Image (tube, rainbow, N blue to C red):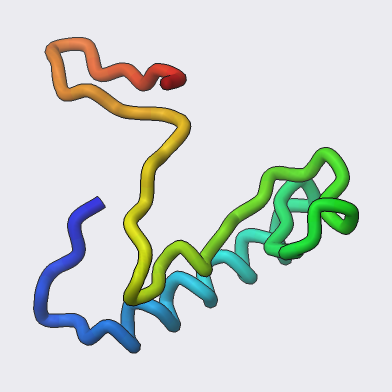
Amino acid sequence: MRIEPRWTFEDVRHAAIGFGRELERRDPGVTTAWWKEERGERVFVDYNQNNRDRTIASAYSCARSRAPRCRRR
Protein backbone atom coordinates (compact mmCIF):
# COMPACT_ATOMS: atom_id res chain seq x y z
CA MET A 1 0.00 0.00 0.00
CA ARG A 2 1.35 3.41 -0.88
CA ILE A 3 1.65 5.97 1.91
CA GLU A 4 1.44 9.66 1.19
CA PRO A 5 4.89 11.25 1.45
CA ARG A 6 3.56 13.81 3.96
CA TRP A 7 4.07 11.30 6.78
CA THR A 8 7.46 10.98 8.46
CA PHE A 9 9.22 7.66 8.87
CA GLU A 10 8.56 7.80 12.62
CA ASP A 11 4.82 8.44 12.05
CA VAL A 12 4.52 5.44 9.74
CA ARG A 13 6.60 3.22 12.02
CA HIS A 14 4.47 4.06 15.06
CA ALA A 15 1.27 3.53 13.06
CA ALA A 16 2.50 0.08 11.93
CA ILE A 17 3.32 -0.92 15.50
CA GLY A 18 -0.05 0.35 16.77
CA PHE A 19 -1.91 -1.41 13.96
CA GLY A 20 -0.16 -4.72 14.65
CA ARG A 21 -0.82 -4.56 18.37
CA GLU A 22 -4.46 -3.52 17.95
CA LEU A 23 -5.04 -6.32 15.46
CA GLU A 24 -3.48 -8.76 17.94
CA ARG A 25 -5.73 -7.42 20.72
CA ARG A 26 -8.90 -7.81 18.64
CA ASP A 27 -8.19 -11.18 17.01
CA PRO A 28 -6.91 -14.17 19.01
CA GLY A 29 -5.71 -15.75 15.75
CA VAL A 30 -3.13 -12.97 15.27
CA THR A 31 0.14 -12.35 17.10
CA THR A 32 3.09 -9.96 17.07
CA ALA A 33 5.20 -12.37 19.15
CA TRP A 34 8.70 -12.45 17.69
CA TRP A 35 9.65 -16.00 18.76
CA LYS A 36 8.16 -18.81 16.71
CA GLU A 37 7.61 -20.93 19.83
CA GLU A 38 5.31 -18.23 21.26
CA ARG A 39 3.22 -17.88 18.09
CA GLY A 40 1.80 -21.37 17.73
CA GLU A 41 -0.58 -21.51 14.78
CA ARG A 42 -1.47 -17.81 14.92
CA VAL A 43 -0.81 -15.44 12.02
CA PHE A 44 2.35 -13.40 12.62
CA VAL A 45 2.06 -9.67 11.94
CA ASP A 46 5.66 -8.49 11.58
CA TYR A 47 5.53 -4.74 12.06
CA ASN A 48 9.32 -4.79 12.29
CA GLN A 49 9.37 -5.04 8.50
CA ASN A 50 8.45 -1.36 8.56
CA ASN A 51 11.96 -0.18 9.34
CA ARG A 52 14.56 1.92 7.57
CA ASP A 53 16.60 -1.02 6.29
CA ARG A 54 13.71 -3.23 5.15
CA THR A 55 11.76 -3.93 2.02
CA ILE A 56 8.66 -6.04 2.14
CA ALA A 57 7.98 -9.05 -0.07
CA SER A 58 4.58 -10.54 0.46
CA ALA A 59 3.57 -14.17 0.27
CA TYR A 60 0.47 -12.94 -1.56
CA SER A 61 0.27 -10.52 -4.47
CA CYS A 62 -2.82 -8.66 -5.61
CA ALA A 63 -3.29 -7.94 -9.28
CA ARG A 64 -5.28 -5.09 -10.74
CA SER A 65 -7.72 -6.43 -13.31
CA ARG A 66 -11.39 -6.36 -14.17
CA ALA A 67 -11.88 -9.07 -11.56
CA PRO A 68 -9.37 -8.19 -8.77
CA ARG A 69 -7.75 -11.23 -7.21
CA CYS A 70 -4.91 -12.23 -4.95
CA ARG A 71 -2.73 -15.25 -5.40
CA ARG A 72 -0.11 -17.02 -3.35
CA ARG A 73 3.42 -16.60 -4.70
